[in-house]
Image (cartoon, rainbow, N blue to C red; front, top):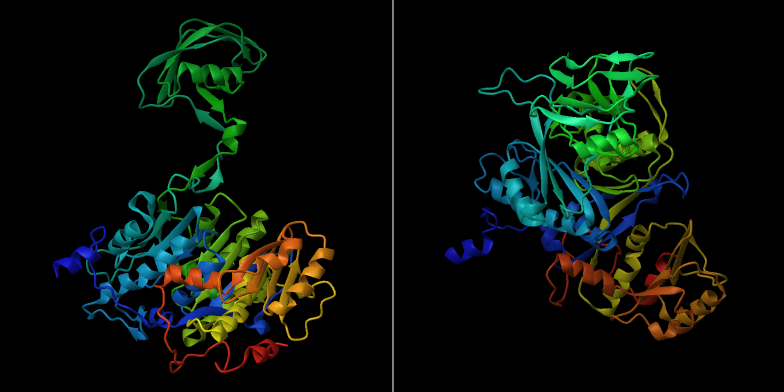
Length: 579
């Protein structure tokens, strides 16, 4: 028992690590993605492509570990709070308040997902996690373990209710929490939703000791005409300053040097700098202030840890009602909360991920933010389809946000049409490394590659016809992708590439049963291609998440829908299927 505790003891957490169906599945199957083209919303390749994935988020995250490792800037998640009131499902069963392993199951569930999430973050990336007091302490310790205690940024307090419940037994809580962790604390930029808004700043502070500063002549004076400020002390509210001699001023400028005493918050060196840059001035009521410099105007102000006006549960309920005419999802977060969290990240070209997507607020917030600041953020949502939530709520909500809708009051809301949305479902391909399974995985990985390289428009490579889709070529807005499923075509493909003008090497995936992507065959166009063996690179990504598999005979488990119907189909037939 002691050995077991030592093995599992992590940052004060000890729990029984249990498994779950989605994890066990991936011991025998590799998750892939299949697009439901009937749900595609396409408003042009110049607009950001957003992705909605239907399926267990553990399987989806494993697929994304290949497409987006080290590429996600902002993750926001709102996981089940494990209240015991049927909000947390583990292996198809609700975990209730009487389950003695309730917290253990939740920790095991979260740990697997957070470990993959960390792999997806960029070096400057950040994750925001909403939580309440049921698991906040356990989550803090778990995140210290997964992300590193030194990468903890802050625990924000968000006011989720306008009024407390008066039926509470002891206290009436109105707050929830948002935990923030950086991938690398020292590389994360300041989290801010606004720049320096004040046009002027104080140079005095009531809490500082009295000191003196030398003011050379030429300081601005907010007094009209010409005159004299008599020597002595002048009180302005709670602050005062005094001059050691009379100060003569003409045309808004002092004409003589003077020593000024007061509770200065800036050194003599900084005061000199303010005067030299014409920022310091004597106010009309004989006080001192300075203008904000141009550098400071562009400087971002940090968000505070107390979020009192970032939307609340009533707002989120109204947002859902306005879109659907009824509350179709009871645990949505308000757009303003997630809007501000995403906005707080320094760039407007970010990749955003939410793998507990629920009603899809994160995508709504991303698109609204893009519309307001001209950004090109892209968002990936992941949710299961329990009670048809993915199709009827997550997808339908954001479809209406993109295309426009009418509220129950008859008000028309214009759509955010500068966005594209693609709907994918998680599927599975056998993981056992037979030649046939490897070919099947290569063929079924095309959607992952399109997402990875953000290119979706399929076309023909030069004059090379492709009746059976023995190769796949995509080209869009200067981005290209080439997937070669039949290696007998390499010679013909190379001939086409020799005739092409290429601005940068084309990511080229070649079906191979090993790690060699036929490099020598591409020697004449080596500067035009960037070669990868397929599906070898997918296995590598999968094995970074799952333990390396032991080859064995695989049977199709009951209830699992594979991406292709029959394992015994020949490679030739597989290539013809999609044609």
